[in-house]
Length: 197
Image (cartoon, rainbow, N blue to C red):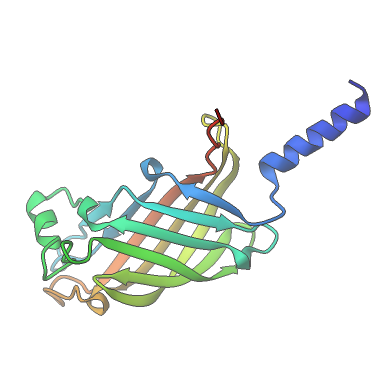
């Protein structure tokens, strides 16, 4: 192998792994993704809970970030506040009504770039059949090859807040705060395609 061939090979490998000239779709890794929400309880404490088994796609356009997008589904059944009685109550009709509305969804409508690592993601949050716009302040943690899976990967943290009463979850307001703060962390990858037989 001559020097020219070797150089071209290295360049091609680098481009394929780390630089995408068109939008690329990442699949969210549920085992490394969490949505943690917190609230004020009668002014005495700030409890928190989380959702798991989160599914979705993140479309990333490095050259034109405004064309990127997020589409996420969160199963209400995965709610965990570390208090079983509260988890059961939150799934009932006066809160999430999980039997009728089993999923929470978020679909982005606009992505704005603050700088190379910070983004403002506006989207439609649907909870209990009610859809309202919310804004995520997102931070790009890392983009590159996953050291274990050996596939392209990306990771973000994001925060947002909103009034739960806007989604029909206003029980016990104002004694239990209306304002909910949400912290999100996610990893997403481009899975390798299984070998064709």
